[in-house]
Image (cartoon, rainbow, N blue to C red):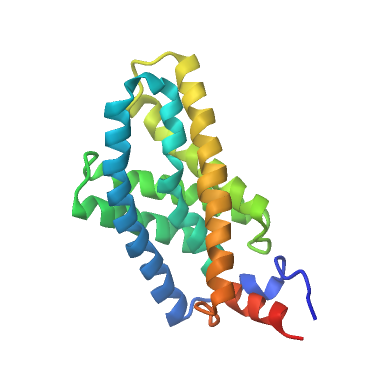
Length: 205
């Protein structure tokens, strides 16, 4: 029997189990390494094509995906925040051009995803909720970047950058994070977690 299980109240229980903590930590570490790698790619693109201007916001989505995946997979209040913050911390410890400030970015981005999930009381995990999480993660990060990175830019430039960043957050982090979660669930790798149990139920005759 196939059912729509993306809004089950049972998947939003607030209590954390050991496997929830471990999974959130693994997501944070894995994406932290990926974030570190992407920082080099970002710099290479920015250096090779400086004319992209505010469109560089389109390159920001990959840094938002840990929070989306953490929230969708673990489905506990705080999972998105912990996963995104840990990913930022790991990338910072390995070494990026932004230093320790990445930790603040991780907190802001994670809070954006948390807010999207909280809007639906942590009971809906559809693709458009994931997309909203990516958009809000970008918007929250821009609260910091507005003056910290782009103080010399015009308001129009900043708004264009924000629009590009939000689009990247919606597509790369939102749709991409949702698709990755679905793939993990279909593989059976996360059967012990809410997203995996829902997928297993859907596969049951």
